[in-house]
Image (cartoon, rainbow, N blue to C red; front, side):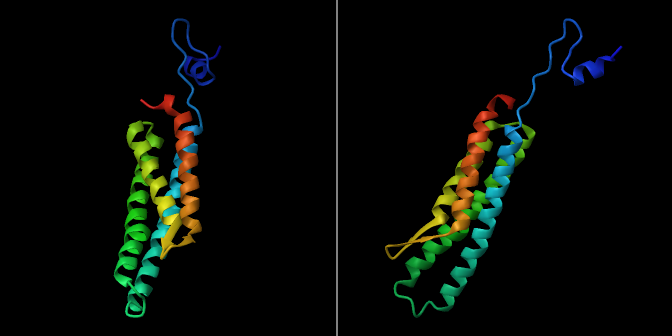
Length: 154
């Protein structure tokens, strides 16, 4: 005879009791994608801070330095910082399977930060930052997996 806890563990329930719903693994996958995207944004943030500091050291030699520095500071430092924080916050709520909206907002902010810091346009010349583009891809995959696991949220 299998005890009641054993029957619930293998998917059977006592007569008259509903079977607990199975949770998909897409939620964990989404949280892992969010964490990977946030880590890539952290690397982008560090690289952006280094580029901005080198640019400030050479500021007198660069034409129209103030606008370039403000652009680099905003897109390569501040925006990835915001995306990284909300990406980690979204991953926490995905692991807890609570507050789907906050998890989605974290993914969208990470997505925007990834594409904005991944494709930079300075002086009309597009520059590609592969860490930002990878962050964009990870957050995009995380959002897709989050929609697959939407029914698991409370």
